[in-house]
Image 1 (cartoon, rainbow, N blue to C red):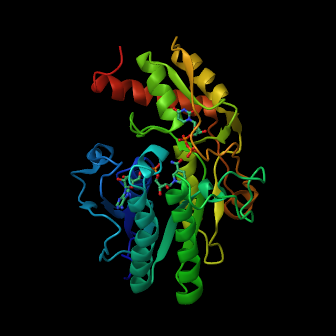
Image 2: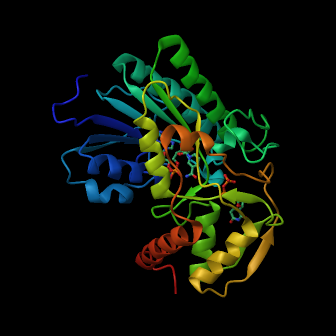
Length: 324
Ligand code: NAD
Ligand code: UDP
């Protein structure tokens, strides 16, 4: 499909009603593009897109990507997939179908249109990594039959499909491996650690640490992540990924809990619950590749990002009448 004269593209974002997708759509629309969002609203919400409802350049399609989709677009960003362990484990078969059949459907669309397609892959492809920090050349340590496998193996299968469509059909692909990202528009019930701890701290509920709290993650603020994705999509055809995108500063979950207690001025107690099966012990991206090919690195450090996220949750919870 030819681009319009003014450089405006028509762009499909799957999973656009979710946390990352809705921020990505905002940036694309700020750049003047027309956006079609396809989402089944499993974990996403129209509230994240409310501000666009009157915008003639925005269209929402209630659509599950496990079914084929036929639209005319210039670019595709494939983000549809529940990302929180609580939700991807709720219906693991559908999670796998979303990753694999969804990828086949979106790659088939990209093939018909001859357009560029982005895949939101994940640090979970490294599983419980034996190499630290994780470089893109590391093949990972993934349990194929565990409770996280629907997501980990689904996303690995999707990467395989992206690379095979690239090799076999010359599809223009861009694959990012996203590390734990947080920020405004996460749902209070999302179940991931940053939103859980903030909501618990603001509501005076116990902070739930799973396991010994010594497991680590590296947290990226959403604005940094979206900037990285856009830079990757703008690279020339020689850059296809996979590229790690994340903030390499690593924290243990007990440190995160105490930081959030301090920033929320909360006196919630900290409780320890059993650790989930196959919970990775450590995770930190090596972002040398992102630095060299994208000239990208995260700029917003944890404290600043948490303050902005806490402000969002204060407003959100007040609206829902949840915090005291
Ligand atoms: P999210 O759950 O907020 O958003 C996912 C969106 O996809 C939701 O709007 C949901 O309704 C939609 N969706 C789920 N299954 C679908 C289907 N079959 N058809 C259509 N829509 C469907 O999660 P997020 O954090 O915004 O993650 C977005 C993407 O980025 C996901 O693919 C996720 O795997 C990837 N990712 C996110 C992180 C992170 O830390 N946020 C890390 C690694 C990878
Ligand atoms: N976690 C926790 N308490 C919670 C939610 C999560 O201690 O209320 C831990 C979880 O066991 C994991 C880490 O926080 O070790 C990150 O979990 P999350 O679900 O955010 O993401 P992922 O495990 O996919 O990186």
